[in-house]
Length: 108
Image (cartoon, helix red, strand yellow):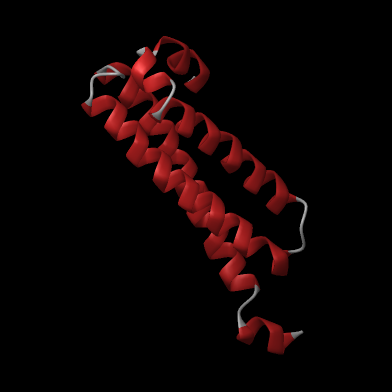
């Protein structure tokens, strides 16, 4: 979805905000992929990193929408996906917090 929008951004924003958003999407995927292959104790920093990148992306997408580089329909569509990603990352963080809590460690 993002790649299609990125291709039609006005040049002024494609090579600035658009490029930064594109980089953040890649960094977000890298953080999630890295976390998925680590032990539960090692995942948290990468999941938090992915959550921060998601929040930054939301802001950049809002700026692109406010500057009319993304129309309402595009912004809504991608914002809904970003919200879903944020919820999934939040759930993952909650699960990791429970798994890595001191009370849980004492039970083992």
